[in-house]
Length: 454
Length: 163
Image (cartoon, rainbow over all chains, first blue to last red; front, side, top):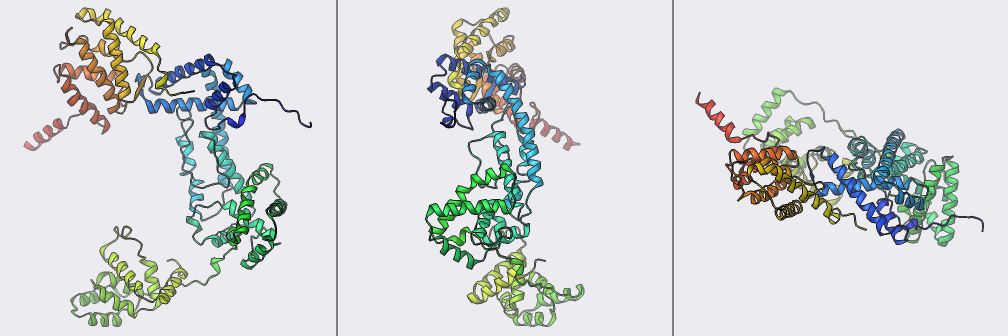
């Protein structure tokens, strides 16, 4: 016998982190540590304390209160007491405290703990903000922001809603925070986010961007966990004997790696991944104990992802090859100089009185010399769909692509706010493109993607 | 182990409320009004039902004694309609606590009820509930003063138009 451990009466596995107080009462009643009269006494004290808190909530103006509000206050009280009981050395100490202490006193101690935790969490938020990553991912930026997690510090009500976490948190961590509520949840979330940031800071923002582009070109709008993708890819690089810091692994290398890894059984695969993870921490000189512990916790999830990737021959989805979208050639489209206002007015007047479409087309061909003027004419000349189509016919792919880029047709709902002329231009342009051959459509959309924004 | 609030509703609180109602008899005697022990129990029952149907909870003795003390000098209450009126007023009170979104305190609501009952409603509980309290609750919800009246502003506008 190497370790001597104290024998506990209460099975801590049965205790809930979210509703600690009620679960410890239940557990100690089942174990016989609390009898019926103890429970009744605690319940009566809780009701009396609820009456006191409800009166304070109403500022003495009202003798009655809505049941939902009373229930919320009760939950808040129990949460605060639970927080104090959690701070005891172990569950058995918490039960003996429950037997002797007065509910109101335990609440006050819990309330003080909330204040301390609130200060710690504020500090944690500042730290996480300070080591925030430079990324285009929307959910990441929106969460680690004053309008995301920052709202918590303005809206949190520790007196009556201590168990709530009023904040907008959409960014998912590698290991989601579960079984915690209120301030504890926010604190844990921020701690983990800080650690993930600390790990990701070992890589250049540009490399992270290229890696995420390799995952999906539209990664900025996806609900992804940056840390998980980075950590997995870094392990992949090490398994392929590449430098983990640059995250540079090619599609061919991933294929080769798949052939190599598929020879191993699950156990040796897991061993290889663990070794790679240890080497990664060494290469990145990660010395922080808390970060090492966090990574250790994430490793089983990453390992099972990699093993699944190997077994389903889908490793290219697990290990990502970076894609440098900046290397693709870009097209800068210059719309040219617009004509004089007086001349433009004359042209529009002529176009409006013109009876035949062919004459209108001839006029446009003759007088319009710039893309800007053409755009204006499409809006102002009250042309019909056939006339639009004839004009589009004389334009080249680049001009059509520029029109698509500037006047994209999305959905019927999205165009309702636009002017009538803009709506018809978008609609006619879309129907024109739809009737083109698939090859030409592909060519045009390729140009659209390469066009530099105005 | 249940911590549902309604289930632990103590009979102690009920007894306290009955005692408080009976105590009011000392004061209301000067107006020729008195409630028996049974009346008091029935009033507390009415309160419990009103609280339950309006989704509310009360910890102290409640507001019945406040309603009695405020309404006992009303010229429209006599011994023959006393208990019945207090029953109705109690139900009305809790209903309008919700309807006013708790924006008005107990004392203010009871005072408003008393003034309207003795004044505009001339002792009619239907008018009090269906018109005065409903208007007041709507005013509060829309951010007006409790006694704000659209008729009044219309009248004033009409007068302005005449000149």
